[in-house]
Amino acid sequence: MKRKPYLSDLSDGQWALVEPMITAWKQGRVARSATGDPGSCDLREVVNAIFYQNRTGCQWRMLPHGLPAWSAVFYSFRLWREDGLDQRIQELLRCQVREKARRLEDPSLVIIDTRSVRAAAGVPRTTTGLDANKKVSGRKRGLAVDVLGLIIGVVLTAASAHDNAAGTALLDQAAERCGMRLEKVLVDRGFKEAVIVHGALLDIDVEVVRRNPADQGKGFVPQPKR
Image (tube, rainbow, N blue to C red; front, side):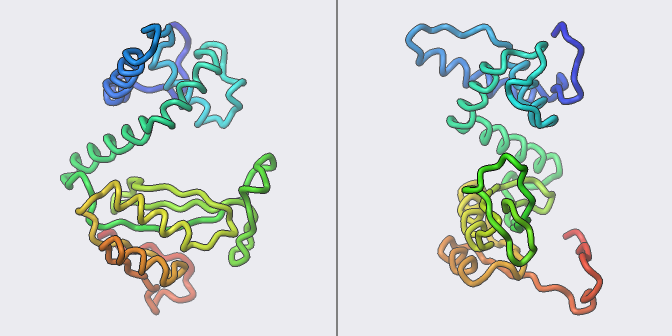
C-alpha cells in the first residue's frame, strides 16, 4: 500500500482474519467465470474502501482517488452481499469472539429490541413512516444480540411498522443462525402476543421482561450483567 493510511483501514491482524474467506470467494468466482480473469483489484484495498465509505458516510463516487475505483468497490460490495459473504464473515468473527470469552459458538439466550431513528432527507418516503408512540418519523431498526452484545440479526423497517413485524423476523434470523442452541429470547413490553406465539412455533421461549417496580420514574436503568 503506497498511500497514506486512513483511520478506517484494516490492520494486518484484522486482514489476516478475513483474508482466507475473501480469497476463497474470489478463487471460486474466477473458476466459474468464462474468461478465468482474476482481475487487478487489491482485495484488501477494496475492503478498506468499503470501511472508509461506511465510516465517513460519503457517496460511493466520492471515494478518495488513492483507493480503488468506486465502481469496482461497489461491484464487489454488491456481489458479497448477494452471495452472503459478508454474513459468513460476520458469523465467523462472532463465533471467534465468543470462544475467546470462553463461551460456545452459538448463544442459548438472545435479546431483541427495536429503536426508531430519524431518516436522512434523501431517504425515499416509501421506506419510512411515523412511529406514533415515540413521535419519530423515519425508520425502525431491530437488533438481536447475545449477552456480549454481539449481533445475531438485524431488521430494518419503516418506523410506522409494529415491533411485532421486526420481532418475528429477528426470531427467524436468530433461529437460523443459532440453531438448536437457542432456548430463550428476552423482549420488552413493546412486543405483543404474536412474537411469543411465533417463538413457540420455533421452539423458543420468548420472555417479556418487565421493569422492576422500584425503578419506576427513574428512566432507563441498566440491569446487572448476567
